[in-house]
Amino acid sequence: MIVTDSIKLGSLKIIQSENCLNILQLPVPTTIELFKSYGLLLFRGFSVNNEQMQAFAEQFSSRFVLDKDRPIVNLKNRFVTLVDPGMHYVSPHCENANSPFSPDVVWFCCAVPASQGGETLIWDGGRVWEELSEDLKQLFISQKIRFVQKFPAADWKRFLGSGSTIADVKRTLDNLKGVNYQINSDQSVSLEYVCSAVVKTKYGNQDAFANSLISEYKNPRGMVTFEDGSPIPVAVINQIQEVMNRLTEVITWQPGDLVMIDNSRFLHGRRSFTDTRRRIFSLLSYLKD
Image (cartoon, rainbow, N blue to C red):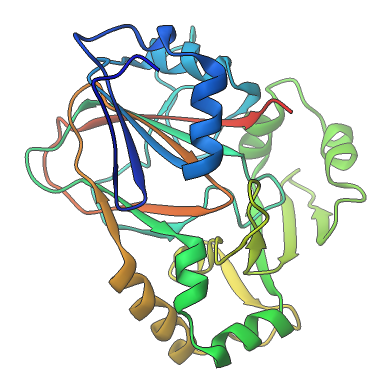
């Protein structure tokens, strides 16, 4: 590993470059072992741009997916997008964890940080699970959660590909565990996804409260309940939020930073900001076996 410093700051493992070396010079086997161990890597000093982010990610990834809401940066790197539109606070979530299509890795690359605010927030789902009360643990062990969403045709075509058809939707969704769906007359898809709020991490097989419960609970476009359709009490959400407030970690961006996040373990969000120059790129991928 070509670094002058490799330190741990909270959950974050920082890989510091010497003299702005090209990030593609980093040895892949060593990097993936660090990722398996820590689950959250910040590469600093490599002056990474969005094209280098995708080239670096390709070394580890079997395939990329597009988020339905994020604007594509350019057609050449069509999986690289800008982060969530707007400048508002983003609640803790794991990417696409409200569906059966949660990627292994979330990549973020900073071109321009906000002058104030706009930091990316991180929560270690393993630590969150450890800190929840025994009553809450038993509640989520005994009851799964249910997400209900509606995807217009434009959204599922973005995910499956512009030439995809209803037959492709059915082929993708049929026999998926926890999934019920309905094809509507306008070719939109109503999707119901049932899963546990506590998951096993991809590496280490540890329990983690890694999900999109908080973000979807506050999302007016979606719906989340217990598996039987009963509402999740506000008091339960407040207790979870109180634990997460105590465990919030912060990534303060510098230009050229690249972050690699284990989506089975870490939740992420962001602080609000007002600086319209802020520019953070994102990429979602599944890892090679």
